[in-house]
Image (cartoon, rainbow, N blue to C red):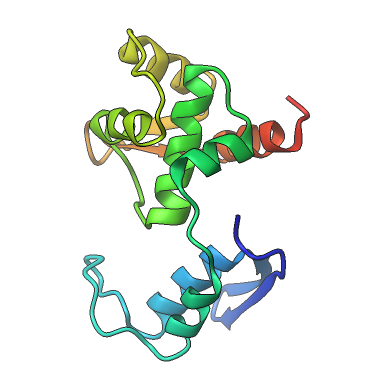
Length: 156
């Protein structure tokens, strides 16, 4: 998992006032955007100084390690956890069913026999949602993030 040392993000401007602690992965993503490492379309440009140092400090976390750390057991929980991993560790803002199928394989998990049912259950639980502007692309909701966190904390 990312470093336990929290990073503080502060942003003040017209109509915006944010002062929040974030983990190392989020700090790196914010640093890249703020210092111009990503353009509007998400394409990577030159890496900013500081981002390289921050990235070197962060040990890589495999999908299997992440899945084990959040203790997801049902297929809808795993789908939600995979979506969180893709967003938080791979920089993907959203995901497809094919991304999730590849995640099951990458984590050494058996592919579920009924992916449509399991996606439906995750969506019905409010853990993931289809992006209304991008058919076939899903994102993890706040409720999904809370479910992953509860599972990781053992309070499911």
